Each structure stands twice: as C-alpha cells, then as structure tokens.
Image 1 (cartoon, rainbow, N blue to C red):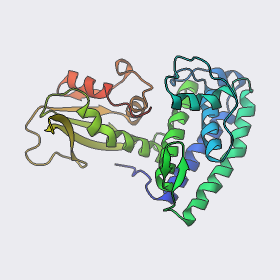
Image 2: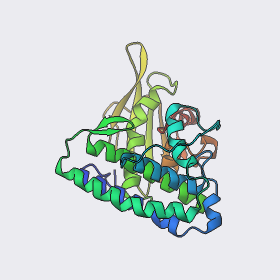
Image 3: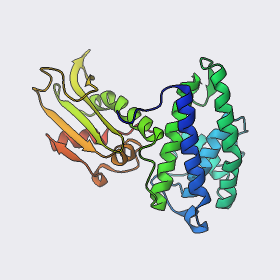
Image 4: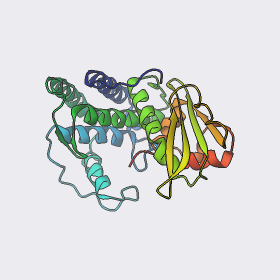
Length: 281
C-alpha cells in the first residue's frame, strides 16, 4: 500500500493530530448556514458530525454522559447507537461556532493525552469498545475521526485529505475486512475477487472463496502485484475504485448503485462484494 498506513503509536498520534486539525479547520471556516447541511451519515448534519467527535473524545477524556433523552430516531437501532446519539442530541440547540470552539479547546488536550501514552505503549486502556492497548485504541479513533471528517467534506463540497495517514489506515481496515466480507457475500466456492484502489492511496488485495468446515471461507491470496502461481485459473473478478469511492462505500455512506467503479470479470460478483463491504457499525 502506498502511502503506507501508520502503525507505530507515534505515527498514529500524528495521524490523529492531522485529521483532528482538519475537522477543526473545516469547522472554523463554516458559514453559519453550512452547519445545518445534511451529511451522508443518516440523520446528522455538519454540526452533528463535529458534536459526535467531541462526544467520543470527551468520554475518553472522562466527561460524564449527557443527561438527555434521544427518543425514537430511524437511524438509531441499537444501544451503541443510542450512546453515540446522546452526544449529538446534547448539542443540537448549541450554535455551530460554539460547538467548534468546544472542539478547539478539547482537541489539544486529547493530543497531549495521546502523547502521554508513549511512556507505556503496552498498557491496557478502558474504552467503550472494551480494553485496548494504546495503538489499537488510537487506530480506531483515527479511522473514526477521519471518516467523519470526510462526511463533513462531502457535505461542504470540500473534498480532500485522501492521501493522508487517516485515509491509508481506513483503506487498510476495509481491505483487511475483505476476506470475511467476501465469505459472507454468497459467492460460489472457487471465486476469486481482487480489489484495487487507484489512488491517491494505492493498494491491491485478493481473496478466494474456499470451503472450510462446510462453510464459505475467504482465503487471502496476496498483498502484492500478482496472484500466486496457479491461483488465477478460476473465476476471477477485479474491482477498481478510487480511495474516495472505496472508503465511502466501506463506511456505508454511498449505496452501491451510486458508486463509481470498474469491473474486469463478473459484474454480479462485483455487486455482491460491494454490497457486503461496509465495515462501520
């Protein structure tokens, strides 16, 4: 993959700082009416996206849960979604610029806290997702904040930051999930699927559907430029997308019918894989 995704804790801190600053910069340059623009994340506006980032980082910073009632919302369908929505609901009556200023105050505190983790990178941290080591927790935060940064960018029509460490890490997470997604896509045993991202983040990976314990299993084939010898003889479908299209689909923000991609091989296979590609809750 090029550029290589961050993996060391120091690299992940830099990636977090970069995408967090991007969210702040976007918020600071929003006109008042732009805060109310809808985003590709169901039910959330530009301001709601910033509220969500603040809410999660605030919770990790020790802030108490907001004392608000979420109510019935069609985009909230589980307990985790209820937890996430409380932070957004608590700020719905707050003017957009005030929400941005809240992030401007919290963001440097979070960067400083993440730098403190370098002293003990093997410690276990309590998070809403359970106990995680610092690198795992921070990697999760990078892809979440970067994903919501992209939600904001699309709503504002300010596309960018697609060659960033956050973009590379999100791309990696989507491609790492491909074996399980392909296995669940209902494809015939022996089918081979290759996904190529054409840029700005460039990557290529392949999966073959095999039978394991009587069930379809996605077997990762390679992470380079070609299939191993003898692996290209079956039904092979190659899907090519840009970084933007892959990550928007991986985030579940764009329906397959609205996706731009190229296919070499079976179109129906490609559609089944892309339908199964979403990695977000």
